[in-house]
Length: 319
Image 1: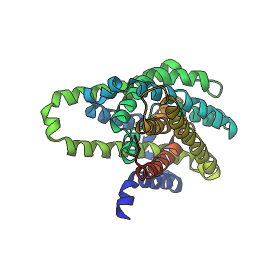
Image 2: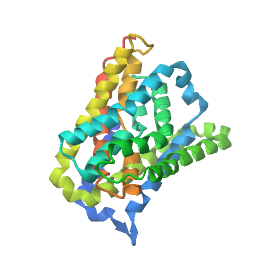
Image 3: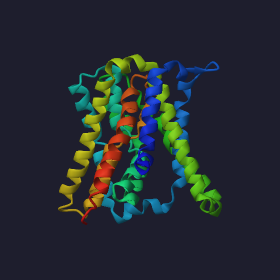
Image 4: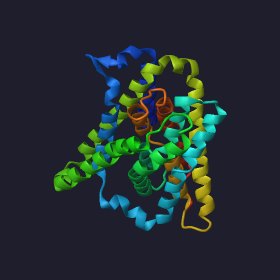
């Protein structure tokens, strides 16, 4: 029982935070006259900075070793997920800011939790890390364009403002983290385990912070329509997992993509960066309503990813 709880610790924490925000929304609004919502982007920058400190050239070896896998994953990431988001929004009747938020969670990069899920699922962890890095680094260019194209019918999307915001949220902190890693050199390597543990704690805090701050103002809406919003995440993520896996398996007939790679692509495509989507919803769209699909996704993706990892872990790939 204890090993199972350890594997599900992040998902359990996410659920607990969401329930607290719904039950006691007043706790997560303003502290000492300061609006907590204003610091959602900062929490995501801390996560991206931590990601930057862990990156080395070795993390990008998969681009050279398995370029087809990286290319297939990136293409599916930014085609399947945004189009699936539009489809789910129309099926469930989402409109306005809620529909825009659904498109937003489909248009961002892959989430970093996917790397842990890939490890548990006996997938290709090195490839997972590479794909997450690549999708994250190209997202400042692709996400604003997708939002303008697919979400412009729901809300006004300032492409330039979103581009600038994503550069601040992604490239600047990731770049600063990389510079610090190089500057520390051997000192970082000598203390890698405690540093990585601290960065993981910061990442968990950042995701939980953005979750409670965005959920709290919409607690009444969630009580009324929470199941529908959660259903949108279930449908969206399931489409990502399924098409990511089966398209990869189909392409494996003509490209060097094996079972482990297909599992990796499925996880990367299905698991989006909910924290990034929530930060953009608040910082660029100025809407906590638009952040609701991202927060629901943060809960469901970690739960479903853990369940999928457990399923695949018991079924080692033959290849």
